[in-house]
Image (tube, helix red, strand yellow):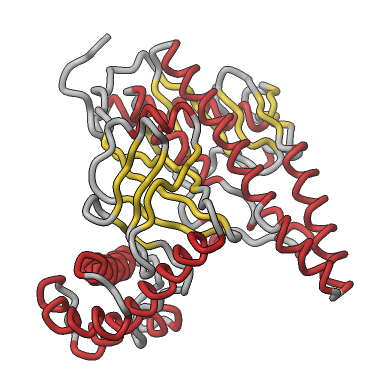
Length: 387
């Protein structure tokens, strides 16, 4: 499987930082030119597009031979991604406004968009923790970088491209690493996980990961943004720019912690993980005006992605089940009715009379559905058991 390792570059001077920024601008302007040619002449294959724009990219945008090749590949990959999203229906049905808008114009790259570098134009020295990188101002050598100990271990097996990213005036390199993926074991049951807004995750073991702290953090940042936006002063704009990504980083860190805990629990007990398939829920669910911010800041997809990749690294099977009526169905007698869900936190079955926390009941129902899906072979099963 592929995972990424991120390192932060520490340019020694303003000249080096300016050279890196100028390189991103030149590469993305060149990418926009190549994208316009690809769209106008329907040249979406790399070899064909490269013949058409290669010399223009070198002459007009001051790119070297290998950076020009990487720019062409980046443009072709962008169109391949667009085609995949259209085919998967992520941009709406055929003829929809969003899909027509995406298909009617060439792909556009921001001036600070990420740029891929291969081993010909980027050299790593892991012992010295430095990199040597090509720029439009010449090759810059011995740029220090810092990263976590885990990232350093991953970089030892790095192969292929790395992306140069500029974020809030800082430069990062994001390397893709192939790590061995263990074989998925035959689970001894499943750990059902109910994802929600009030409680971020509730397991079928009865453990509740409440979302109160994250909600308070988000509300504090919403209030701060509102207050700063009303001021309209230069200092307020600087403060907005300074805090704009803190909420997202805090939410991602919270989801990482929860995902790690879920995978560790499942691995320790030799169980799989059962999740609801919540794709498209924002389009299906309506919310009152005062609840829309909470609904649309709910990072269920991110948490699900974190659980999946951490589970793959540990060999833990993950099953997605149909989410319909998981909050209304009794996990004991299977009686389903909307009145079973008395309040947000209370579930009382009108048939058998069992009383449970609503999210706990939902996670137990998810666990039962995952067991049924696994037993009837509706998911990919491991060929042999490793436990």
